[in-house]
Length: 476
Image (cartoon, rainbow, N blue to C red; front, side, top):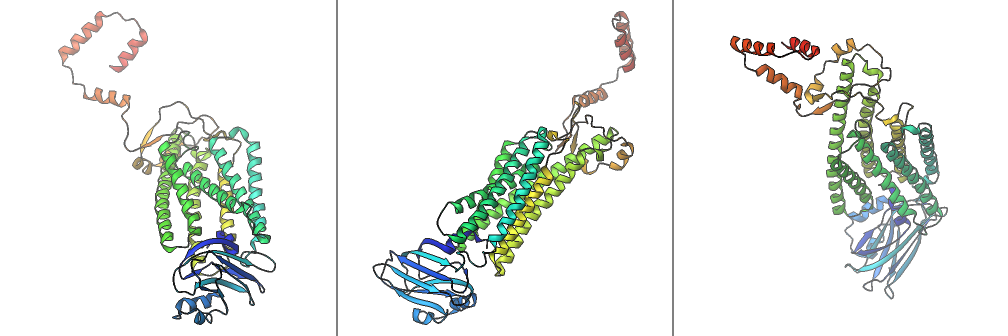
């Protein structure tokens, strides 16, 4: 579980209704403090406050005891506090360092409404012990993110002529990634010493959502060919990508806040649907892009130019790497979630893994989309001559024989204009030349009398253009 609920572990006001509630675990040092205050209790009763280790909590859930006096023996840190004037308070000191779950039970045995204010703290920090390593790890990760952003800016300045809409989009993405890790570092350092609200929690959530949303949307834009294979983009696809990227990130973040099992299932179903649609769209786009690049390389090879000396090779590698990146990104997060769900590892490890994955994604974006000297026309780089655009079906592209055409493609590309990028179509459109060819083949044959009559008429007409006579003779 990601420690987004750090504030809740330290201090939070919640409305509860029921017999018992269980708060999230908190790692205590020896001498750690727990305090709780109940106000606006709907009935006069007694509350049982308990700090249970994981083993004690397991016994608590399996216990057949129903009275608070009997339940006190299940967890060694337990206290009973009566309610006076709709309020009750307690303070407890932890005698053994460890990770404890907080359990609060209404001894009346019936549901009641009340306002709960809890406070967790350690002698040297307000953070849980399993999060305290983040105080040192987050600044290190901030340095790595900062180095990546500085490199990106320097590369942009040195190759400013290659600026494009896609490059600006990724510049914003990297900037928000740095802001996220910077705010995250401040987040932990602030709550290390104080539980006062400063807007750090809200900023943490907003920047995390924005940068991951922009990352997924940007990769999907490129998978559809925008910025690399085409300068225009389908508005319908753009809206769909934006919605899917937003739903995926929102559902992942919401999952970390929801404690109800039923709501968690609903959120995960929404995530699964959005992810399947997103991934299918991403894979289809990458496949179409690879087919387009492959067909373009074939057309270039037909002109005697070795396509491996053109920027198309880099485009082919880009789409291959992008596929590995998106699969690896979600695969690692899924593996991380499974591991930390079934094994009680410190949350600092989860945070470290998350930061490493995110940092790797940032450097992957920098590697793939950095500008080069030849990017004077943006990422498309290739100047194309005004020839007729060829069309290929998917089946034709898959069956292209590169061995034969590569034997003739011996010339190294000198930077001149190349044949235009072909189109991948479901079925070929019929060109005008092809229609005329069909009409010529289907024209009915003329008998000798018609031919003689036609020649007689032609002989009577004066020749006004010698070039036309030559062409006409060639056609005959």
